[in-house]
Image 1 (cartoon, chains in turn green, orange):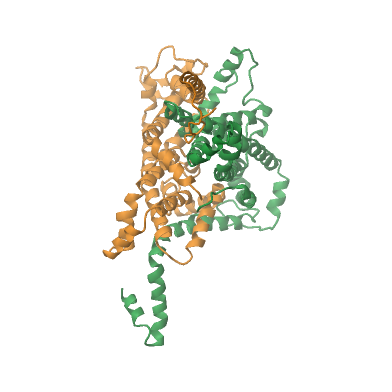
Image 2 (cartoon, rainbow over the protein chains, first blue to last red; image 1 turned 90 degrees about the horizontal axis):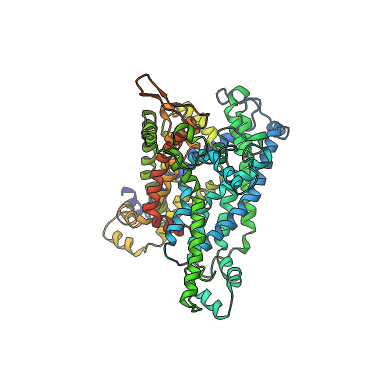
Length: 321
Length: 303
């Protein structure tokens, strides 16, 4: 409060004028600064600092996480990556998974939302049941799915043989593991569905009324109204799902019972590869390498997000804002 | 497939019979879908009630429901992990909504230099993969003795409450009319009183939403605990289940008097423990599903 009084007296001499300006500045901004202090501290300590130290570590070839990092080299860890077969496999798997899984989940969760958007009795219960698997812990659902997809005793193969099909080697063959992972992931569609439902609610009813007066059928209304009006959500889902998909970790790890990348590393993912290096960092001096791997992931995710944002001209945010 | 949206008009007056037939079709389709989505949960329930050998045999229903599995799963190890989880969850559920709305208030109702830049930085942190910061943080936590404590699982979240939550709270606070706080300021209230007395209570819907998502997210999280909790007595429930149950099956052991000495890890016990993980989340979801959907809607209304 003393400083505020100084400001009022500021006009008289040049000396307090400067202090008055500072006081003025804090009077104007002070409250805002206090409100954002915790988050600023949080970002500085828990995001920016580790981000930068990770970058520094990533150039060290011998860092083990305990002794100070040494043997810095600009391209050493990059060279190591391209000679690392496991890394290349993890990239292949992560890309394949993302390319298939993201569009598949977008389309199927949209279809599910359309179905769950009908006005019939008890629709809320159906929505709830479909969403329910999303509140399951990934650990628990991993254990459950591992048992259900067991080659000999699992329900899935019992079902397949019961309807006269061959049992499917869900997680026991290299070629079948990725499809299994993607199929099991479909039980999480409820999360996407809820997002779509909220977007569908936002579409003004008049649009449909006008369209139906013009004799537009289901297909036309879907293509000309529903989908264009949903583009913000498509965009949001696309960004978040791509970012999330590149960080696939917990669901694979639990499904393979902590066994890393499954048979022949067929479902070894990028983040798993990072944790493998991280877990052996002391004996292999690979902490720097793990940091380099994670920074490459960061750059790739940032670039991809940038590309999606750049290409977002098709997103319709409505006339008013 | 008419009437595919809540907003769909009644532009065609179908005969009553026709509409009933159509609704029946929807009911059948939705019921079948719901059943398919319930498969993993159904598996958990039935397996948790089976005997050891039976539970690994792929049986569909328990021949003789073994309710004592739930008692066996509720052992001292479990209770300790559950207690750890509870502490972490309670701290986060209280602190995250508070911190996020505190920050969001600064962005919505206080003008200050650099707010635009800072907000952009906060949103940009959403893009940083967790694994990038986790490794250096691990090194730091080791040095400052935070390993095997709940601090790494609470302090970072308390400072700011997460970019997504801040964004959501800001979206919500923007809809609160500023005339109210102008009146309060005239009455002599400062910014903090405005926040705690007006904005915080009015933000209840979005706070509840954050509490629900924080609860399920933190309670189910396994990656954070996996990195920072290395001692069995410090495990959270999710991590305890992860470590104990991902290995091969071990049978339950009894002493000569028939008392349990070691609880086995056959699928029946695994699933009974899993049910203890699922039930709190399911209850929270069933009670608050409306708030959950509303919260998602708040976030989705125009970025």
